[in-house]
Image (cartoon, rainbow, N blue to C red; front, side, top):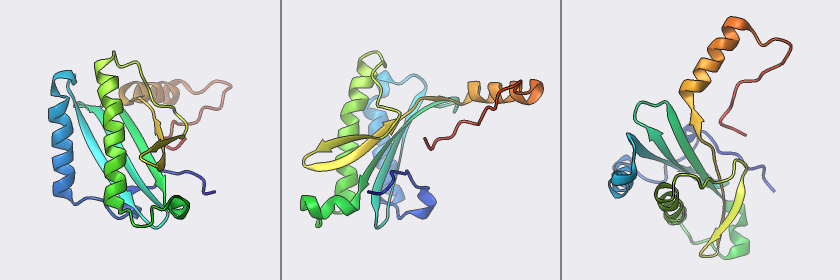
Length: 165
């Protein structure tokens, strides 16, 4: 099995044209407007021969805090599940619908329901895909980095935080 990895969007073919992405972003932001706290949704997607991936990020408008959720469908599994005729658009749309249900629960239920940090397998309508998410506070991370630059790490090796777990 392939090691699960969320690839750089620069290396992938976009699932949707820019106008469609703007429409999806607008629909999500409109749907959840009453629950957003100076936040917005940003959707990114891409695919290649190995995988179809989707990232739906809830980010604070000032960029300090963001919560990206990554969804990944491995295409090599398609033959075993009779999905060879399913397009990247259809699979990404299915994953978007699936994660939309999560966002509804997250935003309406106190924001204390989180997806796992490590890849977790999910199935929807017979399609298998993996999900992971992590809340990041860029402001606090920058402050911590500045403290380490100014005062050093002491006796400990401290590695920078990476989006790739």
